[in-house]
Image: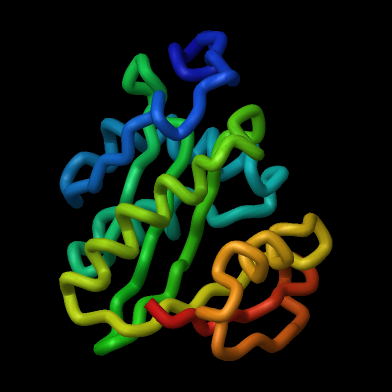
Length: 165
């Protein structure tokens, strides 16, 4: 049995007690099991497959950030694909027991800072409508949201956002 599933997390951790770390493409083997467990749990086994995730993490032109608990275990991640002055947030996932604690904000803060230093002016992303995540993004970014549209996807109804950095 793997260590990731056996550990009992301290789910009371706030963003001040977690660490955001930039992932350098070269160690997929070391993080694969933890990332895939988070992907499966966060998206009810309907998220990206292992081949897709490996490609996203190992593509050196993508930005990948990991969220770790106080013990150094990965509890979340986000990924951005940069294209000129915009970046598409491909995926953001947090272990379900860490939802509602500001952890997505902690990840996005570091990612957005890096994107700004690279000259990115806009981020775009798609977010699920049915689970309320799209509404949370709308509320968080407020007036920085310059465009939205809704569409159906294989994962259900999604809201696409264009957000000013």
